[in-house]
Length: 450
Image: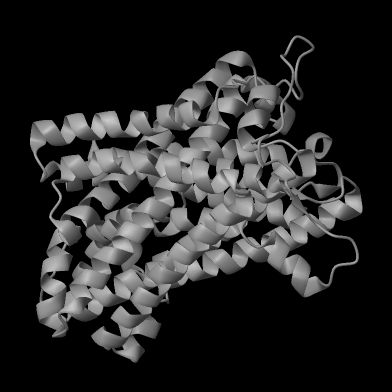
């Protein structure tokens, strides 16, 4: 089947119909709100473009990543570091495609799906995106609630409700300018990075085995338990909501709407994204390294819950503050991710439905879609159900990933849509291999669970 026939089978329209409602800019309240002064030096432009990549990077160090990396490190030592490295490479490629789509077309991924697929296909993708947002928010909300419980002994169900305050934080910061929001996110990322640098120093990992862990082994395929955890790490690392988010927030920069202007914007946005994701690689690897150095080495091979890691960290390291700063990092990661997750909910609602409602109401709806099921689940199963719900959210996200990846690959590989910014043959091959691997692993994961 040719690409054209494949697209037709998916309900391909290749552009909005004449009867489509008026098209809106992505996130209109901040669209093109950050000016790029002419004749600016390379370094200053780099600083101006820096930001969106870091908002995206927080999704790669969220509480869902913590659960899988802690389990992987405690059970298999450093062996799964190679999976984190590979997953991060996948993320860098996919995020490059997402930012390129947003800059080249002036549309985000949700808008492109609505405008280029038939109505039934677009509705299906929208429903899958909403499920994805709920699953994403569940992980972030529960992670923040667990951190509040560990730090202040606040019941998890109360902590879940408290996380609704992030809606107010977004509105306050965004009303002061999108750069303030970006600065807040970058500050939290810096906090997480410093904390894990400290944790690595305290845990004193063996350098030799650590470096060997970045080299893939055949056990990843032939050891079913290791493969299962590897897929979990992949599902927790490559986050589908980030593809929607990145394609929208890169349009906050007021770059020239010319081929040269867009080319420059793609270059700087890619530098921003790759730098931020490299930092996310360090954090993800650090979680697993600390887990391996503390738990695996001392024979604690079944650390699956964040609470267990918190309780054991201080006595095993001999540093009373180790557990406290661990919980602080978890809270920072959870709050970071809830903010960007809520923002993505806005992008998806506006993009697929072309629905314009007040920002506070739009974000409150998105937050409630996550808080309500979390409150119901924890009320029914108790606080112990929080970790189970966290793991379930990662499985759902893993399954949802392909519904965001393949539309992105179709759009960025289409000359009519992308013009001169269409994927090169080499990039297209790499991207489709990545998409196929992700889809194949998720099918295997579903088969194993069922």
